[in-house]
Figure 1 (cartoon, rainbow, N blue to C red):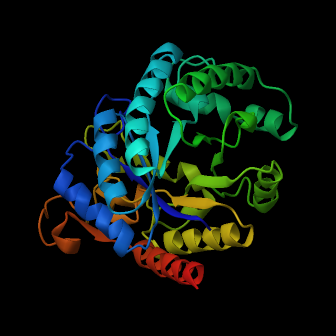
Figure 2 (cartoon, rainbow, N blue to C red):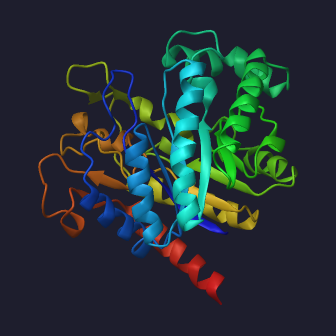
Length: 347
């Protein structure tokens, strides 16, 4: 596997208007990038978020450490016109880094059908998700029926890639949802957010091979699982046990924390990806700073997080290498797995 990767969030806008990472300290970023390289044995990182300057700063740190950067701007809940201009602006900054360091790949966007207004007939992101993942919509996808949102998405991506290529002269990809039908001729690499759940478990490998048959390098841009019993069956929607509508966000029901579930899920996927000879894989995700750990399970948002480390509420010092988080089991399992891959690739 060419790219042993992980996702790294520098702060994405939430529906409520806040950021998933309010505090952005370059000293912390530097330390975390060193951990990603040295402790996790990654050689690539997908850096995503809203603020382009933050992405650029984090990317330069990663590049100086020798990591390949997948530069991944994310501006959810905006119009198509606003999104195109934002993506083009981001590509200008990505090109400056690529011209100096070379190993920069531009990720043109992520699951636009959900996060951008105008592809699916729903006002909110939540409404678009309900529409896309309703039983009726999923049945249409299984029958391979043409969807109007894919037609609109194709037109949007066609225009956006043309404009981005005028600014960015390296490799370009897009982080697609598996319900989106992308013309990959527009891109240099196939990018797929690919989570296994009860719904697609039987066809998981078959679907992966279908993308490989297209003849372009395939990178799984996101895969992962939360750390509670049953999360392996929920895939990408494992986070839904967190109720963010409460004044103090809390966990629904009575989930049982189980870090082995998350660790085993990630290892199983990596084995599959290695066996299928895909080009790269990016675990989702390093840390989700807004999903704080709490000893009280009712408020332990971390179990609804895809992060392989758990952020601490009060402990600013005394965490892992004096950072404000502690590793989960997935951190150590991923470290061992990538270390072995690195050893084999260097033989």
